[in-house]
Structure formats: C-alpha cells, structure tokens
Amino acid sequence: MGLSWQQGPLSTGSIGHFLVPEPLPKRLLYVEPLRRRLRLRFGGSWIADSERCLLLFEPGRYPVAYFPETDVSPRVLEQAEHTSQHADLGPTSWYSVRADEQHIAARGAWQHTNLPAHASDLHGLIAFAWRAMDAFYEEDERIVGHAADPYHRIDIRQTSRHLVVNHQGRVIADTKRPLVLYESGFAPRWYVPRADIDESALTPVKLQTFCPYKGLCSYYSIGDARQAAWYYPDAYPEVRRISNFVSFEPDIVTLHLDGTLMRLEPGQSVVPHGPDRNLDVAEVVPGAGSQPA
Image (tube, rainbow, N blue to C red; front, side, top):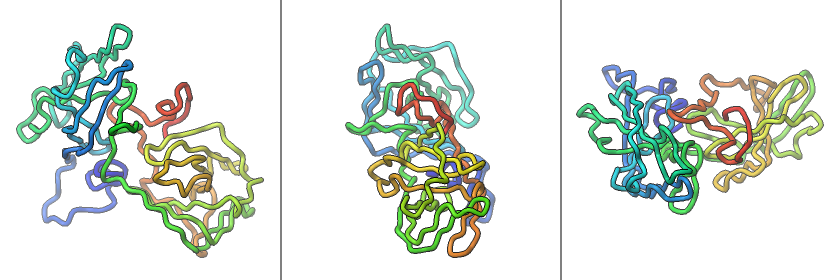
C-alpha cells in the first residue's frame, strides 16, 4: 500500500480519513529522502549510484526514486525530442539512456523542467523508467517491481481460528492452524497448510504473477472456479512462513472463519500499474509471460 496506492492515506481509494476541519485537495503529492543507497545498472554498467535519492509518492502510483544529476554517470543521458505535461509538476523532458552503441533506451528517463515553487525539491533530479533499465539495487541486492516503499509492511501471525473453505458443497480445506497475513492496504489473507487441504480439488493453472514484497505466485482452479486459490512456492525470506501455504479467494469460493461467512472487502484488487511499468513475472523470470500481479 504505502502512502499513495491501493488504500493508503494519500490514494484515491483510502479507507480512512484525515481528522481536519477542511477537506484536503483531491491529489496530494509527497516527497521524502529515500535514505538508502540506490544503484542503477544498464547495458552491463553502473550508470547511477546515490545515497541522496528522493522518493515521490503520487495518488494511485507506486513510489518513484529521483536521482540527483550529479550522481548519474556523465554522457549517459541524451535529450529526446519527446516532452510531456505532468498534471501537478508541469512540463517534463525525456531522455534516451545510452550505456554504449548497443544499449540505448529511448525515453528511458525523465525530468520535470519547470516545477512550481512548492515542488522545488525535485529540481535537477532524474527518474529512470524501471523496466527499461537492467536492474536497480539497494547496496548489493537487487530490488524488483518499484522503488522500495518504506510505508509498506507485512506481518504474519499464527492463529488457532477455525477456517473452512467450501465449493459447491465440497469441503476444500478445514484448519485450526492457518497463518494470517496482514499487508498494508489489504484486508487480512488467510493461508492454509497443505495437510489441511483436499489437494485433489486443486487444479494447477498455467499462470504466475509477481509481488515485489512476496515473490512469484502460482494459482489453482477449483472445479469451475478459476484461479480460486494461490500460493507462493518460494516466498521471499521476509515472508518465508507462507511458502507453499495456500490462500483462497472469498469472492470465488466460500470461506467461513469461526463460523462467519467471509467476503472480499472493497478495493482489494491489486493495482498493477506504475507511471512507466506493469508488475509482471518477466522482470524476475526473463522471457516469461503472465498477467499483471
């Protein structure tokens, strides 16, 4: 979720509200220091390396990192003819990014060139199109999907609550030891150990999607209920506890938690789009095809 997308406080679908006497503007942009070393690789070369990036949050967008020009390698950026107009930040110039004659990304970077006074923090800063580059790194570890959002959090808790999953009169799962995953911007998701699932009811789907915080996700159909369940075969270390556990969609199959029917809460569909990219498995599995996560 973070601040500005899904159901965050600055997003268009916020589930909360500010306790202020006057309504806030419909669009609030927020910028802050990233406070992490961010490095950028393109064409086999390091082309940017900074501990002074700013992170821009816009409603309905993933956060975008902006590099100081002085932290970008010289002669990498070439002015492009293309320009655009940002609704809040004004005219935007675009650049080709050139590592060498074989590695050129047209419209690979941009800069806001006539910022309003209140947005002067972004003056002289460059943002790079995520998927046009080879990879971004924090220190020596690659990060995928978008710049790390310091306001996105996942907590996993063991519980003894009774979760039952049914479809068309058949019990698919029955457990008193699910894991509940709390993720910023989403309702709780319940993950079931395989020993408590009738796996004969699960049909693998030829689909993978990608979450920047949990990893590659695979899916099952249950009878005529397509993509009714999902799991992370090898979840990222930070959320390793849910690896190979299965979660079920309450708007596709029937879930009861302690006897109460569960329903999908509004606004839970993942927003896959950033200003210059989709989230898909091709970023982490080259050549793979999928739907957005």
